[in-house]
Image 1 (cartoon, rainbow, N blue to C red):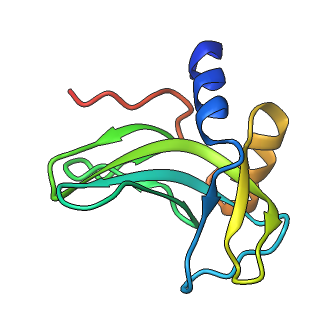
Image 2: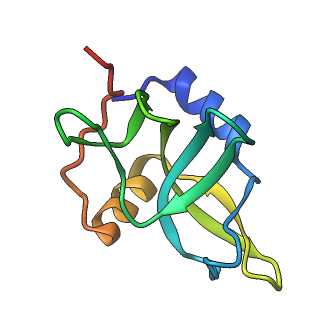
Length: 121
């Protein structure tokens, strides 16, 4: 399980972030997997997706951790819920923990996903 200090760091950095673009029209209450993508060239972005990050080699779905090795590194930051929406459909997110996280993972169809941080071996 991810430790309380890491939970606090993720919540502090990502609660209140806006996600999405013209391709995604969020509604208040939507839940998803929170990711931060860092391309070799260009700006970092935060996304909320329907499916978790998947490791390249072993194809394991992960809830927390970083996957590198391509042109874009991806950090899995758990799950989040949309708490506000702009007219263009971008969503403001809050990270989920405890029973809220359990409910979101059930809703997304991933109740069995490993809650421990992924470490590249």
